[in-house]
Amino acid sequence: MRNVNYERLLELKTLIDNNQAGNKDKKEYLELLYRNGNITKQQYKGYLKNQNSDDIVNAALTIGGVLLATWLINKLFESN
Image (cartoon, rainbow, N blue to C red; front, side, top):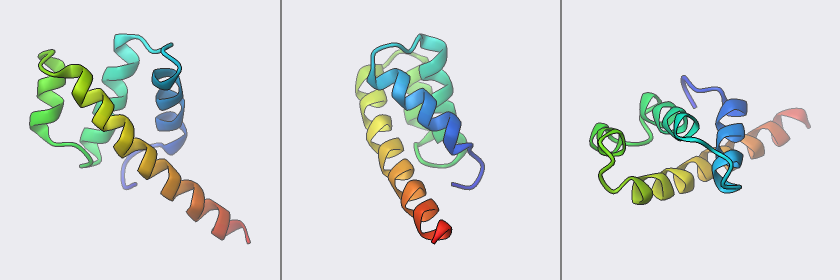
């Protein structure tokens, strides 16, 4: 990931997955993915306008999960 803190992305994803995230947490999660180029401007603005927000969050969770899995695998190989 170019511009995003993986640890923060993981914290937010965990909160969302456990249904403990508030709107502020979800917005930050989507904003991190948007700023990094992982979701489109249309998806981000749609979330902000509450258009298909559940669908957008679910898609973002999948995208974030893939990014985090890649990051963790890279960390594993870097430490060896």
